[in-house]
Length: 196
Ligand SMILES: *[C@@H]1O[C@H](CO)[C@@H](O)[C@H](O)[C@H]1NC(C)=O
Image (tube, rainbow, N blue to C red; front, side, top):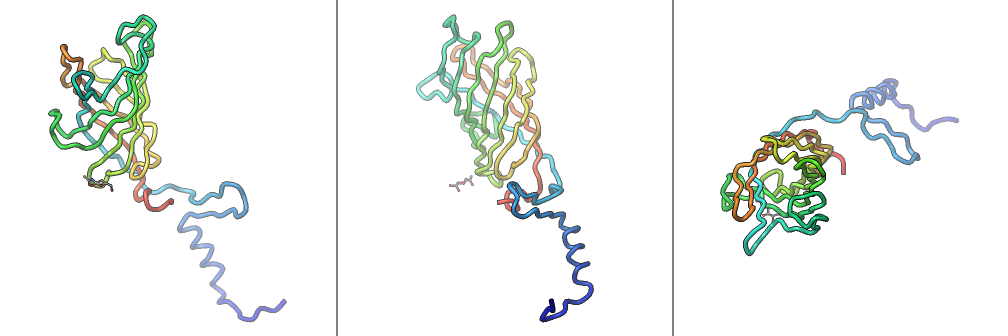
């Protein structure tokens, strides 16, 4: 069959090169198309903030939703739901960077250890609207607790990493605690706009 125009001879080569350069492969018509063979460059972000667990007073941000079988606080089975403020400094009235939404549960029968699940909802600067999800064990009696980053959204899509949490101040009367978090989290350059 005749074509109505003839393409330049280099045309097929340039198409092959284009596909090679942008690392894209399409398998049309299949369920789940490969859109990129390689992800963009990965970078590591460090962020530091203070996490405020307010259990006492008129405006708690951390409330007990499940009591333990023994009815003793902070024993196996105890669950607290949190919507804790994240601030730039240790003072509660310092600049707000976001909130930690989630819960912590006493998950060890022998130890003082929590299962913590929290979404860090970031509210400042370029991170505003993005989230980082932390899921892991918090061995309360250890000086520094390491909690894995399970993923993220927006700026932190496909994130991985870890958080190091260290108690800054615990009020023995109210039970309130201020914890310093250092989060080390990866991201892919441009990923919040490239894959919609
Ligand atoms: C974060 O984004 C929200 C919604 O777009 C906006 O209302 C708010 O002012 C932003 N905050 C900061 C600190 O930029």
